[in-house]
Image (cartoon, rainbow, N blue to C red):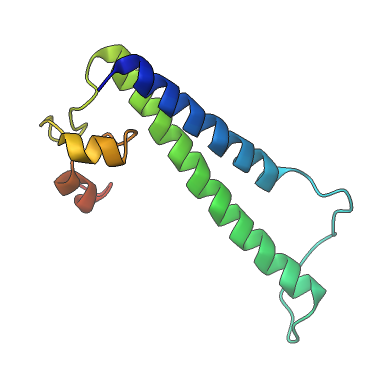
Length: 114
């Protein structure tokens, strides 16, 4: 895998996610005041649900950006392609599918608790 091409791929994906995050987190032109869930579904309830969904999406995108930043750091460190948890080589097929991954499949399945 060509490191320069990989850096360009990671940078392009990061720009894409950063733009999406900015779009999700921009302040509305006409902000709604305090929102709450009520007994009836109405504008406030719908807006609150939308905000919850937007917040979840923004967190997911921010986590993806952190993964991209970690991949670039691993390139700089010379550890790209090695699992952050177990240190084994990450299979090329996985790196081609998810070039920003920092864990092998087995360690990814274990999650952050391991």
